[in-house]
Figure 1 (cartoon, helix red, strand yellow):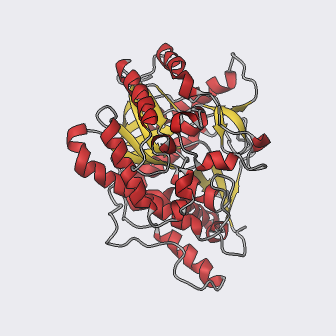
Figure 2: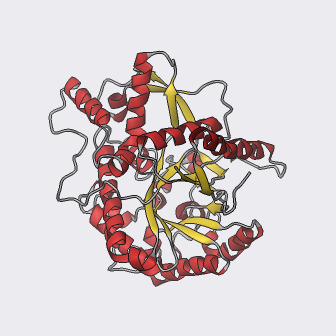
Length: 440
């Protein structure tokens, strides 16, 4: 079933698995702060210790070797490397730690894929405005150049920012992720814009200063569910589905892969809601200026995080200024879909194939890496893990069905699995992930 060169790997994120939140000069992150506030996280849990990979890396490496993995996705803790977020204050203990991890992986013939930002902004930068600040893109660009210079001789696959949609909406609109802000209808769009600018700045730096010598590739990881109309023949539901896809996948993919600007359907919906609510001011969705680094073309591959699917019904938005009101849709779970260990994660393997088809047709047939996909379980796990086995069997088969439908060539695809770690605000769970590169 798997072609020659198919690569198997494991994925983690620094805050979720490292622990050592104050060890060896590490600075605080926004998630350190968020989890210390009572009531923010399920049972007031935190990842202050978590899997303790910071101290137990050698044991993790043994597991990676025992599994015969060829790739390992990790994220760098920005505050572990730069405690105040700037290159004026480098924590050499942090540099030594990641040098060891990367060197150990390379010595074992395992290719590292490194994410620069996986939700854990230094608290020192949050205190200066965080991702809302107009200065954050340049600060991130300096951090990215530091990482390229320090680790790029061995790292050939880079992700700048993981899931900017989640950071923007859950962290700055809904307030259920760090930094916990609830500023509906405005801040999430600003944060998303600044993240795109930060990504573009990092990509241009790599392309200009490091690519020729280091020979790596760089992208950002975009998350999206597969969305389809609740009533396939209903014009309103079809339009609502297109609108919802524009607000999720299109928000970050359209500027990078298609036009260099946000989807027009997204801007029209936001401006129409502003007018309806008598909002006084410029468009709540920022615009790109010629003075800013160009966003279009700043990805060497399409990095996709896919977990589940939803049916979409028109209407059910709110009456005020908010992202929900702008979209004016309702997401519905099909009752026939099995639910995993968390309520939002319905198991819909065919959604992956449908989403890959949509990406191929919408974003100019990019090379796709599925950088996250997984099945969640809560509580004590059984060694005879039938549910997880069935999930991976069914999900991994879907892109292969796509080969026959769309004449694509699968080059390689790491199967990614995390350690048990803190995930979002719901619970501590185990969530396995895999990635797959497809040439369209």
